[in-house]
Length: 257
Image (cartoon, rainbow, N blue to C red; front, side, top):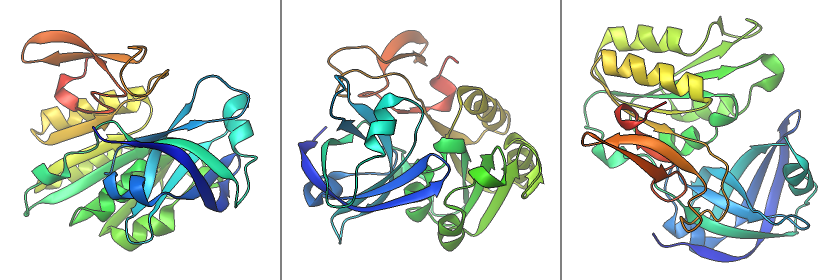
C-alpha cells in the first residue's frame, strides 16, 4: 500500500448541512494513488491522534481529494475551523477500497449508504455503470450530496426516518425491492453497523456479491498499532483483521457483526 504524508492546501470548504462539512484538498500525489472506498488520516493541532475520514471524490486531473465529515467531537470541531488556504496535515490514501474491478459489465450496481456513510459511495458510483443509489438520512435537514448522486446514477432512492423526503423507511426496504427485480451484480455499502448487518443478510439471501465499509476507532491508520480490529471469518477461520490496513472494506459474508 503506497501512501503520501505531507501538508496540503485546503482549496475549497463548504457546509453541506448542520455540522457537516466538505473539504477539497489539493494533493496531486495522493489523488493519483487514491481509489474509491479508501480514507485519509488528518492531524489536527492540539490532538495526539489523527482523524480518519473517508474519501468522497477523487479528481486526478485537478489533483484533488474531497472529504466529507461530521463534527462529533473536539477534534472534528477543530478541523472544521480550518479555512481555505490553510494547510492540512494528511496521510493519504489509506486502506483497501471497493472491488469495483470485480463488477461484471452486465447487471446493476447498488450503492447503499446511511448518514455520514453516504460520502464514500459517491466516487464508487462514479466509477461504476448502471448504478442505483439507496441513501438513508434522519430527516430533510440531514440530506447531503443528493444532487451529485443524481448526476452519476441511473436511479436515486432517498429514505428518511421521519418521511420528510422520499420514502419513510430504512434503506433495507428499497434495497429488498431492488434485489427482487434481479439483475444486480454487486452491492457496495457504508453506514451504521446495524444497517451494514441488515444489508449483508439481504444480499446473502439473494446471492448477490456485497462489500461493506467498516468504521472503528483508529490510532496509527497504517496497521502498526492493531487498535482497530474487526472479527472476520475468512476461509472458515475467525480472524481479527485491521480495519485501517486490511479494510475498511470487507466482503460482507466474511464480517462477524
